[in-house]
Length: 121
Image 1 (cartoon, one colour):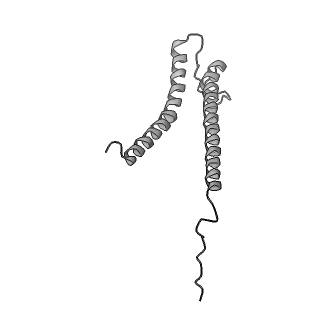
Image 2 (image 1 turned 90 degrees about the horizontal axis):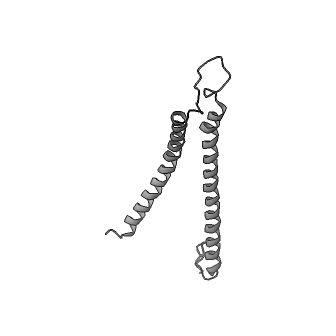
Image 3 (image 1 turned 180 degrees about the vertical axis):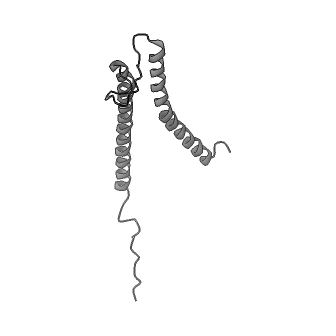
């Protein structure tokens, strides 16, 4: 029963969900991990947390640390999302082409009519 089609489909769906979870939780975890490494392992880059309600600065006032904490993760996420978007567009265009080929290979005249025929008297 392990090779039953429904068991395979459940495994495939579970794998897809795990991939989405890895992307959804993994990318932010990597970004936070990089920020932690930068904060605690590099003496020349400190985030320099600032809390001042009257300040117009970000709470991370070191500009290089600000780029590392926000700019790099944002750029990576935008690139990955762009790649996923492009892959989606390619998959949709291929599916559309397959559907077109299937429709063109079906003889429309031989297909049953969608409208019911009225009996003749």
